[in-house]
Image (cartoon, rainbow, N blue to C red; front, top):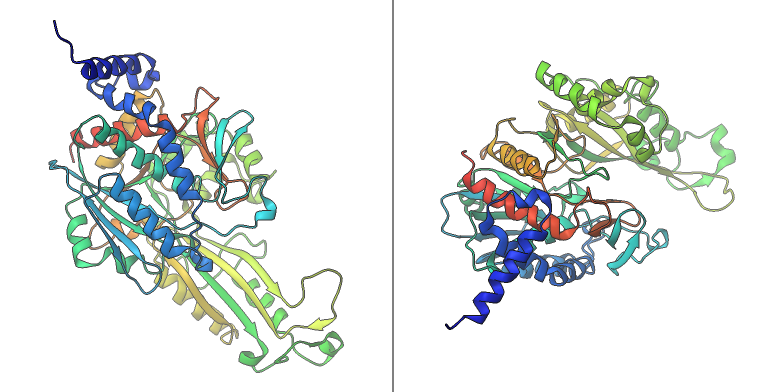
Length: 504
């Protein structure tokens, strides 16, 4: 009897993979076992792909490596099977539009970003562009580098899922339409130009929803599903003697403060009008007039989450001992979900080097971010801020918006959310549900007019340090509750097949 050796080896490998799968994957249909075998076989390839991506700096705020970062992302998309990959120009950094037609009855939209935050290499234990693999206590083997978890790690893991499906000679169960940008970390000022191109809109309108890869697991293995995100505007306030018409036009000796106005104090006084005396409640006229209060079902969702989430652990993670006004854990979560905020990111004026320098500075700058909740808009928030300053005698202060976008909301019963829940529950994870993420992403271009698509974040795996030194993404987990990169790849495979069979 003749035996096809190649077929025999493939079947044997697939059977072995099925036996060694994590428990949550053994419950998936057995015909995915050849794909899981490909994931294990391609582990090194998947890690090297991520390392190559991290080693390419792509910092929009510094206009560093952006064209190279865009081109590398486009190559990776083509390598993963996208047939059409196009660079889309904008008034800022270029975007990417890509499609993968699998001949499937359902299409899923994808959001990618290829830019990362700035770095100060002196703050890192491993150089941020080396993408070094290191052993991290309690976690296992991780890759350290800027973009490791935000967002190149999850995105590279998703691409690895596409490689594994194709490597197993399987057809992708859904078609894919991808819109990517290189300006997320500066507030996505030009992303609408990319998405609202006629050809991009036409492709996205065929989608059943939008999905963004994510490393969703905490250190306890738990995941939280959010049904939206706050919006944001980032602004720079500039107080200067030149524009004010008072104070000096250049830095002068500080002894002159007795007879000369200070642009720095002028800015501080303006900032003081934007919030309550304790700095915690927005006080900008008409800023929060349209803010939607939490609905009863959202309050119930938060109360249920508060009973399961670790308050002490959250405080340790943030390095804080108190919530504002010493509110309860449940109320702290309600504020996180529902309160608009006015935050000072940075405040700079005059000399800040070693020792003293007795000057009266001619210019002072504050960088702010204002978080928005439904039904607020970025345009209304900016207009309210400008009107508020002008009304209070600070109309001379420049208000420069660098980026921002509206909040997002997705229905609880949306297909993309139900598919996430199904995969997590098969992984024996009971996901925590919250009304929205307190952070922001430019999902409004998908969830708002004219597309009005549901959007969600999904993915097993863990990483941390986004926007901070020593950002990492787990490659080989030493924690049985947390998946490494291969487990993340498997979760994306299962998610794609779950989306294919979940009714819209």
